[in-house]
Image (tube, rainbow, N blue to C red; front, side, top):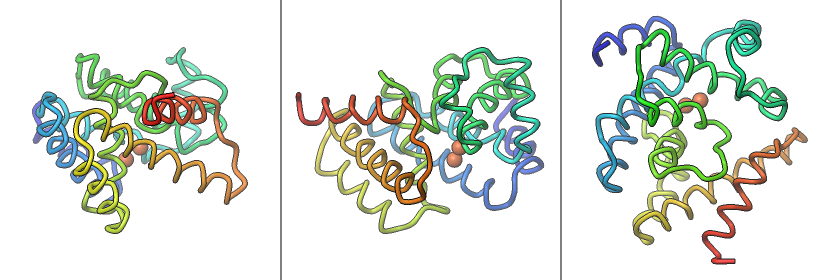
Length: 196
Ligand SMILES: [Fe+2]
Ligand SMILES: [Fe+2]
Protein backbone atom coordinates (compact mmCIF):
# COMPACT_ATOMS: atom_id res chain seq x y z
CA UNK A 1 0.00 0.00 0.00
CA UNK A 2 1.49 3.37 -0.92
CA UNK A 3 1.60 6.39 1.39
CA UNK A 4 -1.43 8.09 -0.16
CA UNK A 5 -3.57 4.96 0.19
CA UNK A 6 -2.44 4.59 3.80
CA UNK A 7 -3.32 8.21 4.52
CA UNK A 8 -6.77 7.84 2.94
CA UNK A 9 -7.49 4.73 4.95
CA UNK A 10 -6.27 6.33 8.18
CA UNK A 11 -8.43 9.35 7.52
CA UNK A 12 -11.43 7.03 7.40
CA UNK A 13 -10.69 5.17 10.62
CA UNK A 14 -9.29 7.92 12.83
CA UNK A 15 -10.87 11.00 14.36
CA UNK A 16 -9.85 14.32 12.84
CA UNK A 17 -7.60 15.16 15.78
CA UNK A 18 -6.00 11.71 15.80
CA UNK A 19 -5.32 11.95 12.08
CA UNK A 20 -3.69 15.34 12.56
CA UNK A 21 -1.56 13.91 15.39
CA UNK A 22 -0.62 10.99 13.13
CA UNK A 23 0.65 13.31 10.38
CA UNK A 24 2.61 15.25 13.01
CA UNK A 25 4.23 12.07 14.34
CA UNK A 26 5.17 10.96 10.81
CA UNK A 27 6.84 14.33 10.08
CA UNK A 28 8.60 14.45 13.43
CA UNK A 29 9.78 10.82 13.14
CA UNK A 30 11.25 11.63 9.72
CA UNK A 31 13.02 14.69 11.12
CA UNK A 32 14.45 12.70 14.04
CA UNK A 33 15.48 9.87 11.70
CA UNK A 34 17.48 12.35 9.65
CA UNK A 35 19.24 13.66 12.77
CA UNK A 36 20.05 10.18 14.10
CA UNK A 37 20.90 8.56 10.75
CA UNK A 38 17.96 6.22 10.67
CA UNK A 39 15.82 5.32 7.66
CA UNK A 40 13.61 8.39 7.08
CA UNK A 41 11.04 6.62 4.92
CA UNK A 42 10.55 3.83 7.42
CA UNK A 43 10.32 6.35 10.26
CA UNK A 44 7.63 8.29 8.35
CA UNK A 45 5.66 5.10 7.75
CA UNK A 46 5.95 3.96 11.37
CA UNK A 47 4.78 7.42 12.46
CA UNK A 48 1.82 7.28 10.10
CA UNK A 49 0.72 3.87 11.33
CA UNK A 50 1.59 4.02 15.03
CA UNK A 51 -1.99 4.88 16.11
CA UNK A 52 -3.85 3.03 13.32
CA UNK A 53 -5.86 1.04 15.90
CA UNK A 54 -6.39 3.93 18.28
CA UNK A 55 -10.01 4.74 17.45
CA UNK A 56 -11.33 1.18 17.75
CA UNK A 57 -13.56 0.36 20.74
CA UNK A 58 -11.80 -1.31 23.68
CA UNK A 59 -13.95 -4.45 23.34
CA UNK A 60 -12.76 -4.91 19.78
CA UNK A 61 -9.11 -4.37 20.77
CA UNK A 62 -9.45 -6.89 23.62
CA UNK A 63 -11.10 -9.42 21.32
CA UNK A 64 -8.24 -9.19 18.80
CA UNK A 65 -5.63 -9.43 21.55
CA UNK A 66 -7.35 -12.50 22.98
CA UNK A 67 -7.80 -14.24 19.66
CA UNK A 68 -4.72 -13.25 17.69
CA UNK A 69 -1.92 -11.92 19.88
CA UNK A 70 0.25 -13.81 22.31
CA UNK A 71 2.68 -11.08 23.35
CA UNK A 72 0.44 -8.89 25.53
CA UNK A 73 1.10 -9.26 29.23
CA UNK A 74 -1.12 -8.49 32.20
CA UNK A 75 0.55 -5.15 32.86
CA UNK A 76 -0.36 -3.89 29.43
CA UNK A 77 -3.95 -5.03 29.80
CA UNK A 78 -4.33 -2.97 32.98
CA UNK A 79 -4.69 0.28 31.08
CA UNK A 80 -7.02 0.43 28.08
CA UNK A 81 -5.00 3.32 26.63
CA UNK A 82 -2.17 0.96 25.74
CA UNK A 83 -4.21 -1.71 23.94
CA UNK A 84 -3.96 0.02 20.57
CA UNK A 85 -0.18 -0.59 20.38
CA UNK A 86 -0.17 -4.39 19.97
CA UNK A 87 -3.31 -4.24 17.81
CA UNK A 88 -1.79 -1.40 15.77
CA UNK A 89 1.26 -3.55 15.04
CA UNK A 90 -1.10 -6.37 14.04
CA UNK A 91 -3.14 -4.07 11.76
CA UNK A 92 0.05 -2.65 10.19
CA UNK A 93 0.95 -6.20 9.18
CA UNK A 94 -2.43 -7.56 8.21
CA UNK A 95 -4.33 -4.52 6.87
CA UNK A 96 -1.55 -2.19 5.67
CA UNK A 97 0.74 -5.01 4.49
CA UNK A 98 3.86 -3.79 6.26
CA UNK A 99 6.36 -6.63 6.60
CA UNK A 100 9.27 -4.66 8.02
CA UNK A 101 10.08 -5.85 11.57
CA UNK A 102 11.66 -2.54 12.47
CA UNK A 103 8.44 -0.65 11.75
CA UNK A 104 6.22 -3.28 13.37
CA UNK A 105 8.23 -3.40 16.59
CA UNK A 106 8.32 0.41 16.85
CA UNK A 107 4.52 0.52 16.57
CA UNK A 108 4.26 -2.36 19.04
CA UNK A 109 6.21 -0.57 21.78
CA UNK A 110 5.21 3.07 21.20
CA UNK A 111 2.96 3.37 24.27
CA UNK A 112 4.88 1.94 27.23
CA UNK A 113 8.23 1.34 25.56
CA UNK A 114 10.31 -1.71 26.38
CA UNK A 115 13.62 -2.50 27.97
CA UNK A 116 16.38 -2.40 25.36
CA UNK A 117 14.62 -0.16 22.84
CA UNK A 118 16.44 0.30 19.54
CA UNK A 119 17.37 3.75 18.28
CA UNK A 120 14.54 3.52 15.74
CA UNK A 121 12.00 2.55 18.42
CA UNK A 122 13.15 5.47 20.57
CA UNK A 123 12.64 7.86 17.66
CA UNK A 124 9.04 6.74 17.08
CA UNK A 125 8.33 6.80 20.82
CA UNK A 126 9.65 10.33 21.13
CA UNK A 127 8.00 11.62 17.95
CA UNK A 128 4.66 10.55 19.44
CA UNK A 129 5.32 12.83 22.43
CA UNK A 130 6.65 15.90 20.65
CA UNK A 131 4.94 16.15 17.26
CA UNK A 132 4.03 19.72 16.39
CA UNK A 133 0.33 19.38 15.47
CA UNK A 134 -1.28 18.48 18.79
CA UNK A 135 1.37 18.34 21.54
CA UNK A 136 1.91 21.20 23.95
CA UNK A 137 4.50 23.71 22.74
CA UNK A 138 6.31 24.24 26.05
CA UNK A 139 6.87 20.49 26.43
CA UNK A 140 8.03 20.13 22.82
CA UNK A 141 10.46 23.00 23.22
CA UNK A 142 11.87 21.49 26.39
CA UNK A 143 12.50 18.11 24.75
CA UNK A 144 14.03 19.69 21.63
CA UNK A 145 16.31 21.74 23.90
CA UNK A 146 17.51 18.52 25.56
CA UNK A 147 18.20 17.00 22.12
CA UNK A 148 20.01 20.11 20.93
CA UNK A 149 22.28 20.25 23.97
CA UNK A 150 23.06 16.52 24.06
CA UNK A 151 24.08 14.80 20.88
CA UNK A 152 23.65 11.18 19.82
CA UNK A 153 21.79 8.42 21.60
CA UNK A 154 22.69 9.93 24.98
CA UNK A 155 20.50 12.93 24.13
CA UNK A 156 17.68 10.64 23.03
CA UNK A 157 17.95 8.73 26.32
CA UNK A 158 17.80 11.98 28.29
CA UNK A 159 14.73 13.09 26.34
CA UNK A 160 13.04 9.72 26.83
CA UNK A 161 13.86 9.78 30.53
CA UNK A 162 12.13 13.15 30.76
CA UNK A 163 9.06 11.62 29.04
CA UNK A 164 8.98 8.67 31.45
CA UNK A 165 9.26 11.02 34.44
CA UNK A 166 6.22 12.92 33.14
CA UNK A 167 4.25 9.73 32.53
CA UNK A 168 4.99 8.35 35.99
CA UNK A 169 4.20 11.67 37.70
CA UNK A 170 0.90 11.88 35.84
CA UNK A 171 -0.05 8.27 36.75
CA UNK A 172 0.76 8.92 40.42
CA UNK A 173 -1.23 12.14 40.39
CA UNK A 174 -4.28 10.36 38.97
CA UNK A 175 -3.76 7.36 41.32
CA UNK A 176 -3.47 4.95 38.39
CA UNK A 177 -1.44 1.74 38.26
CA UNK A 178 2.09 1.90 36.88
CA UNK A 179 2.91 -1.18 34.85
CA UNK A 180 6.16 -3.02 35.50
CA UNK A 181 7.58 -2.25 32.04
CA UNK A 182 7.27 1.50 32.66
CA UNK A 183 9.30 1.19 35.85
CA UNK A 184 11.84 -1.11 34.20
CA UNK A 185 12.36 1.31 31.29
CA UNK A 186 12.62 4.26 33.70
CA UNK A 187 15.31 2.40 35.67
CA UNK A 188 17.15 1.39 32.50
CA UNK A 189 17.20 4.97 31.20
CA UNK A 190 18.29 6.26 34.60
CA UNK A 191 21.24 3.87 34.57
CA UNK A 192 22.17 4.95 31.06
CA UNK A 193 22.05 8.68 31.65
CA UNK A 194 23.73 8.59 35.08
CA UNK A 195 26.19 5.91 34.07
CA UNK A 196 25.36 3.77 37.12
FE1 LIG B 1 -0.60 5.65 20.57
FE1 LIG C 1 0.16 8.70 19.10
